[in-house]
Image 1 (tube, rainbow, N blue to C red):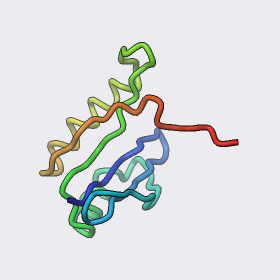
Image 2: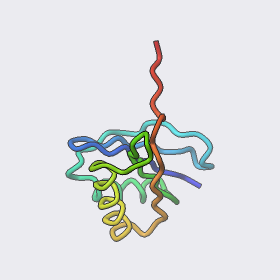
Image 3: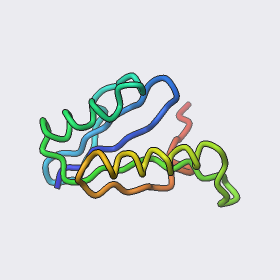
Length: 99
């Protein structure tokens, strides 16, 4: 199962892709956010993607702020445009600081 993941940003969006079995992931590219849906459709076809994961920015206290609301809107847009499973995944504590 190949999985494509999205780290959305206002200007640029990071895209990562899993290996064909869905065990490991690696960065793929960064695309302008204004071209997101078109680019995702192309990438899903090119890499034969089975599932999309969209990072969901929940606050540390578990509430949703403006960024989470934007992701809910994007989630709905993607579901209408791309006929795949698209899952929102809590991205709290997914960035580690390495020194």
